[in-house]
Image 1 (spheres, one colour):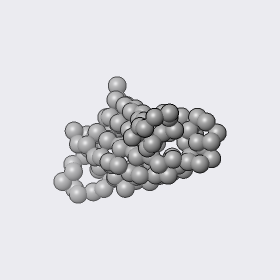
Image 2 (image 1 turned 180 degrees about the horizontal axis):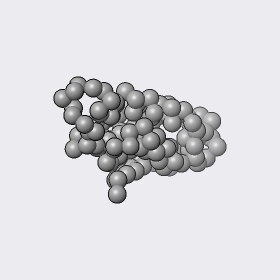
Image 3 (image 1 turned 45 degrees about the vertical axis):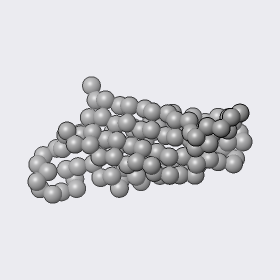
Image 4 (image 1 turned 90 degrees about the vertical axis):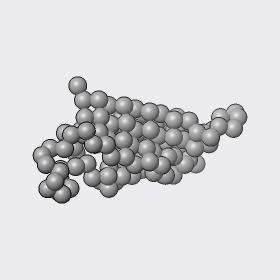
Length: 119
């Protein structure tokens, strides 16, 4: 099994349940871990035999641009697109952290963690 990861990809986006969150926006950090068994021989040194972390980053960027009420929805959309692009993937973990969420006290971040495991 091989794992590729993106850690701490930072975005300013307009996700949030409350209308003011979708107006003023917030900073987010996204981590993505993808586990897979390569289809074929990696010794071929061919990008088509692995998960391209640049493409994963583009998927995350595109999904972070679409405002949603729940960051769970964003995370699931990221997972769904990675599964579609790379059907040989065995596991995916997406962590989305909302920095300084609008709460009544000081909180560094809130987070949603979504895991996919191929059955």
